[in-house]
Image (cartoon, rainbow, N blue to C red; front, top):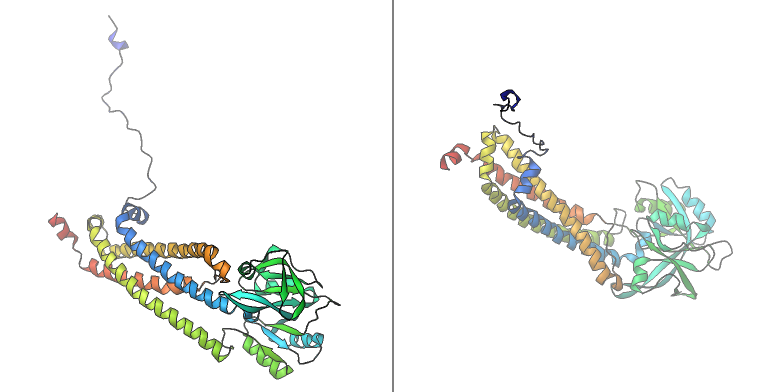
Length: 389
């Protein structure tokens, strides 16, 4: 018979439960709440996304068409083309550089070539830059060589804007004829960036000699102010195209009309989106009354509940806006490759206007939706909700 002392003793203590790993997410945190309520958050998110996508697409199309129409004058956007009226180019360049409100001046010669914009053939200027400063001028405009290389000084090599080259089905190694220049120009590079710039490079003794200047104003100075200095102080003729206050009356009227049209579109869509999101916010609140009752039982007062609801609304609408802007950029990239490049239309991917224009849309929607939920919370009675369950 076995010794009782040798038998294992049964313990009266319950077996210790394995410790569960503490969760890093609070079950009532903002992020967890939004993820666990997809059918309440998705309608508001999608409404904001589609509204931002629609408006940003319209604005980007409008700015792209306007941008393309102005492409032949792009090299004068914010700069001045200076005619020294027979004065030596070197003397005129030194005189412009001495002006206190001038940043730099480049000696140039422009040769027009046949361009294609909006399916219409128009002359496009190729700017040949003296003293081997082609790279400096290109960087001044914010552009860069996307394919090929910069033209060598003293040659008839040129670098074309990549959008213009695609519209005319040209590439590196092809030749293009100048409208008033007998010799063909050989394409050795393609330029990409915020400006449409065709560029060549001059050297001493080359067949092409500079006959004008491109002058840039100093930081904080508009081209119109520098134009007054050059005309009044030096007596040179100037020409520029700019949307700043120094522009001409017709230029400013064009920009004002475009801004008025886009402003009207944004105003109407902001009112529609604010109304839709306000109704969705009220629906969102009513669908989650049980959660707000639970928060009240846990000690959340009315101001805390209001901040919680407004924070959720702002997060959902803000995320919808970000996704809408990203979707606009992706959609326009697709349309650009399929339709626009062969028609000489350049999409203004570098222009932040579509994102800026939709900001009032988002702010109005957040304000109206937050006001609707705040009013609903003022009438919210958690005790009555508990008694009714």
